[in-house]
Structures are given as C-alpha cells and as structure tokens.
Image (cartoon, rainbow, N blue to C red; front, side, top):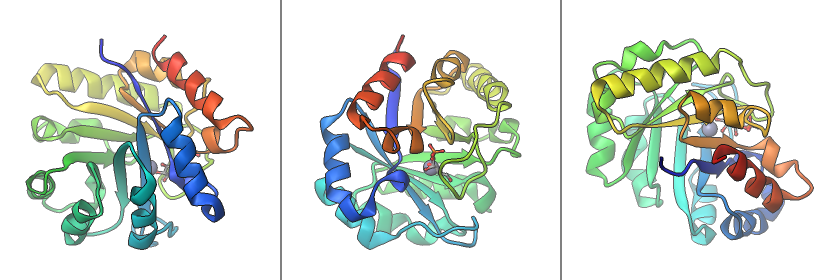
Length: 220
Ligand code: DX5
Ligand code: ZN
C-alpha cells in the first residue's frame, strides 16, 4: 500500500509569520502544502490571492496543492499554473463543463482535482472519475477553518473508494475539514490517501511533532 500523505492547510498559519510557518512545513514530515483560495462568492469568506500564494511558493519546497473555492475557476487555470501549483482542485458545484475544465488543468501540466461539498453525491463523478487525479471530499462546509468534522464523511469516502475501484481509476482521495488525530485512522481505513489539516496542526504548541504524529497514525 502506498504512503498516506499529510497536507497542512496554510489558511490556519500565522500570516504575520508566513515565511516561518512555511519553513516549519518544509522541515516537517508533511507531504504537501494545502492552499485555500476563496472568492467571497462561491463561499462566504475571502482568504488570500495571488501575491500571497507567490510568497508561499517562493519558500515552499513541497508539492503545492491548491483548492479553489471560487466561481468560474477556468478563468484562472493558467494563472495558478504560472504560480507553481502542482495540484489544482476545482469544485464540482462551480463547474458547468467539468470535463473541459479537467482537460484544461492537465494541459497546463498540473494534476486535476475535483472537490465535492458535503451535499454533493459522489456518484455524480461516475462519468469523469477516470479523468480525475484527485477527489477532495469536504468534511465540513467550505469557507472556514476550525469547523467540526461531519461524520457522514466516512460513508462518502467508502462510496468513492468503491467507485474508483469499480472503474479501475487511479484517483487519490483527499479529506478536507476537521481532520485530527481522532479521525485520521478511520478516514484512511475508509479509503483516504491525503489528509488536510489546518487548525489541528497550526493551533498545536508543537507543530512539527503534531504533523509527525498525524502522519504516523495515518500510516499505522
Ligand atoms: C475549508 C478549507 C480547509 C480548511 C481546513 O474551507 O478548505 O482546507 O483550511 O481547516 P481545518 O483543518 O481547521 O478544518
Ligand atoms: Zn481546503
């Protein structure tokens, strides 16, 4: 079995000390940087945009996993490629022509991800799963860090895992929202490959150690 990955969410970092926090992730056992881009339209919050992402990628030495919570993401695919995104995830609910969007992301040399809100049934990906490199299952409603994990997520992950196996796809499953040491193992057991963790990592007094422990739990 392949290694399970940990992706600290920079949304929970200290923006007054961004370089320090990016360096902490660089030096830790984390695998990816998870970057949340919100537009205040698709979600009821605005996070940060291109200049901040540029500041992050200047120092980051690991995979840049960008989660777009924006309407009409097609407008910005080339921009996020130029900024150094390795994985670009769009929301299913924000894409009228998802298949076209996925091809456009791959044409820019990035891995193509699709995020599902908690209400969006995973079966809606039946016809595109073989074109998707990563499915991000929202385990909270998108827009804010620090929310409580939705328990129905386990069921959704298992459903998605079954779909991926049935279709012979190579899609990774990423979980985003309310991930802690308490639910990490059960998520992996249900089929998760990548765990995003914001508050759990950055609110810890020993961030590097917390990342290490979370990664150990996920791979135990
Ligand atoms: C929420 C974001 C998440 C968020 C997770 O809309 O997509 O990536 O940063 O934060 P925690 O781990 O605090 O729930
Ligand atoms: Zn996210």
